[in-house]
Image (cartoon, rainbow, N blue to C red):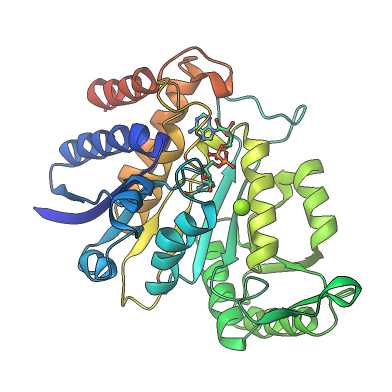
Length: 353
Ligand code: NAI
Ligand code: MG
C-alpha cells in the first residue's frame, strides 16, 4: 500500500467549503485503486489564524510542510479581516518562494457540459506554463521624490536559468501532448528582456527536434486565445504574461470556479503545491453554492504529479459526465449545491467504474 502524505490548508472563505469535497473524492479514488491511500495533515493557517497569532503561518511553517508529498491549498483571503497583500504574501507567496515552486501550470480546456462564453468555439485544450519565480514580478526597484518629480522604477529580472527551466518544462509537457509549444513574447516593444527570452527559446527548441514551435507577441496571443484557442497546445510565458493568459483561459472555460492550477517544485527539494485559480469568494461564502470543481480538478493535477495518471483521467472524465448530466452550481448556470455536485461525482465513481 502506497501512502501519500498530503498537507491540507483549506484557508479562508469557500476554501473551507470546497476542500473537504475534494478530499473525499480523492479518498474514493484511492479506494477504487486499492493500492494507495491518502493521509492528510490539516493546517488552520488563514486570516482567522492571523487575527489570533499575528502571522498567517508559524515561523517553522515551511518545516512542518516540508516532509509531505504535496501541499493541497484551498483559497486565502478575507479582506474584511486582513489586508490582501498581507494574507497573500504571508502564506501563498511564502510557500511558493520558500519551496522553490518555479513553475506555475494552468490548463484550460473546453469542458463537456459547460457553455463557454465564446460562441461556437472549436474544441480547445491548452496548458499555460508560467515562469513563477522572476520576470516582471520582482522586488527590484523603488520610488523617489514627491509631487511632480515623483517617480517609480520597477525592474524585471530574467535569468537564462529561470527561462530555460520554464521552457524545458513546457517542451517536456508538449512531448506528452500534441507536440507544439508557443512562446509568449513582446520583443518588438520590450527591447532587452524579450529578445533574450526569444534567444533562449530558440536555444532550448534545438534540443527538441520533434516539437513544433512558434513565437507570438503577447497582445496578438491574447486575442488568439479568444478567436482561435483550439490552435494552441502548450504555451510558455513569463510571470506577468502567464498571469494574464491564464485568466483568459479560465474565463473562456466558462467560470473561474472550475479552473485548476499547480505550483511545481522541479528540483525535488520541496513539495509542490496545488491550488485552484479562484480565491475565497467572500460574496458567496456560507451559501453552500461554491463550485467544488476547481478544487477537485486541482486534485486531479496533484494525482498526475504523484504519478497516478489513470486515476486523474478517470476523475476528469467523471467530472465531465456529471456536468453533462446538468448537475451544476449557479456560477455555470445550474441550481445544485456544492455538496450535490460532489455527491454526483462521488456516486458515479462508486457505480460506474
Ligand atoms: P475570487 O476568485 O474569490 O472571486 C471572484 C468571483 O468569482 C466572485 O464573484 C466569486 O463569487 C466567484 N467565484 C470564485 N470561485 C468560485 C467558485 N468556486 N464557485 C462559484 N463562484 C466562484 O476573487 P476576488 O473576489 O478577487 O478575491 C476574494 C479574496 O480571495 C481576496 O481576499 C483575494 O485576495 C483572495 N484571492 C486568493 C487567491 C488564492 O488563494 N489563490 C486567488 C485570488 C484571490
Ligand atoms: Mg491572476
